Image (cartoon, rainbow, N blue to C red):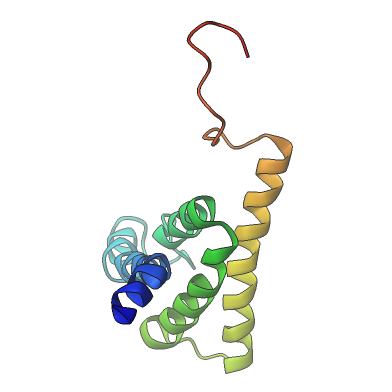
Length: 129
């Protein structure tokens, strides 16, 4: 009983973590090689990085709860998949900043009313408030 409750409680974090790793892998192993074939190897990054979409959607759906799994997944994906020749401090800082930036940007957009999809209740069928 305790294991099932723990799985149910941590399911969103696992989904976010897995989705980011899959999106990062898709960008590095599929989109980036296709982009290099079309545009040459002169571009530094991917024009279509799927991880950004995972960040935005997970923060929009789960709020601040998405920041920790995003940071861990970004760090792991950077270390294991991308393997840049930079220090571990820079990788950790980049992962934390990327995860917090997604949460901050989402809260700023919601505060200014810029998010199209809101959780407001549907309008009353009678036409009143």
